[in-house]
Image (cartoon, rainbow, N blue to C red; front, side, top):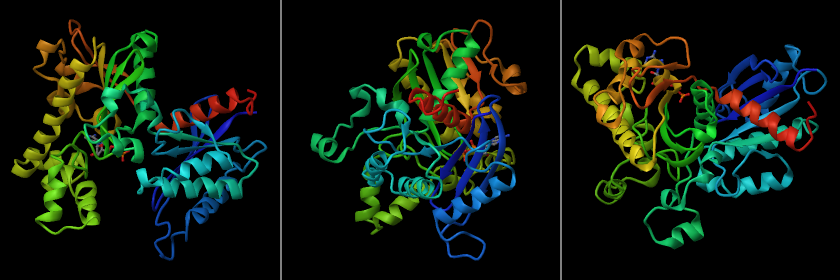
Amino acid sequence: MNVKILVLNFGSSTLKYKVIDIGSGESLIRGIVERIGEGSDDGPADHAGALSETLAKLDQHGLGLGGNGITAIGHRIVHGGQCFSAPTLVTPQSLEQLGLLDRLAPLHNPSARQGVQACMTLAPHIPQVMVFDTAFFQTLPSAAYHYAIPSWLYEKHGIRRYGAHGTSHEFVAQQAAKFLGRSLKDCNLISFHLGNGASVAAIAGGIAVDTSMGLTPLEGLVMGTRSGDIDPSIPLYMASELGMTPTEIDRTLNRESGLRGMCGDSDLREVFRRRDAGEPAAILATDVFVHRIRKYLGAYMAVLPRVDAVTFTAGIGQNSWQIRQAATEALEHLGIELDRSSNHDCRGLPADVATARSRVRILVIATDEELAIASLTAQTLRERQILLQ
Ligand code: ADP
């Protein structure tokens, strides 16, 4: 009997699902339920309703719960705080612990938690595992995860760097190691995940030692709609001088900044179309986007004792030869030398787009967060002998 994992990603108003056959790594079905809880006629009332709708659809495709259908459920959870440093079996206790983290990720965690709760009610006999976006970064050294703010803010309130996109960075690091023909323990990497959200991780011997996202996924690189790094005084200025409320500031920095804030579009393809037409706002937006990437690349060259490869993944990292070129050209002094033509023509992934004499490889790697979550779910259940194959 094949092991089939249902991967669920609950957002505030969406549920993305995918069923993966662990033996072949193939996706059997995928989809999205939208407009959850928006009071519209065609959207479900809540997360439990979205889940029932999904389970009914899976059942129609012969993927019911148990039997020869779904073996287990893997949940993507954005924030695992300091309690969760590895994928964790869902139990009443672990769910209660998860509830304590809501305030660290108010946009994401409560909906994921409601989703897990709904699964426990609707599918009590199906084992479930939570896979955390922050877990890969629980290895960060204290110098990398502490902010230079009063220590009580960390001790009493957990304010520190947690990182995000960890499942993707870890998956890409494994793929990079395989591609380089080395064990992960021997790989030092700078991993760029450039999608709508964007982050970079410094990885030494397969272990994360620094990352650009912080307490929340707002810090670091420029993103589709998020500002990334700014002077921390800016939100104070927006409050005291412009009279903006915390909700308005949050919306401005998370949803109305980044590429969208600078030029009106958050989709890089559209921004490049306008850049190519000579629009100054689109030129500025891509210049700022690239400048920030180069700054982090330089910083992480200094954080790591040796760099074997710089990796690019996700929608922009995998598809935009322009961004990869702008991010890595003229870095020969750091041992990074791009082969422009293989970067431009890069199709089959993974691909190495550095010149033969480049000291550092430049790899383009396809991420697959759902496959990573499904594999981690199966592995966790095997370790606990809940899954015997
Ligand atoms: P998400 O974070 O939502 O999963 P993705 O990883 O799908 O995002 O990345 C979305 C981004 O990738 C968008 O900015 C989109 O413009 C960009 N992208 C996708 N395909 C291309 C392409 N062929 N060239 C340039 N950018 C692309």
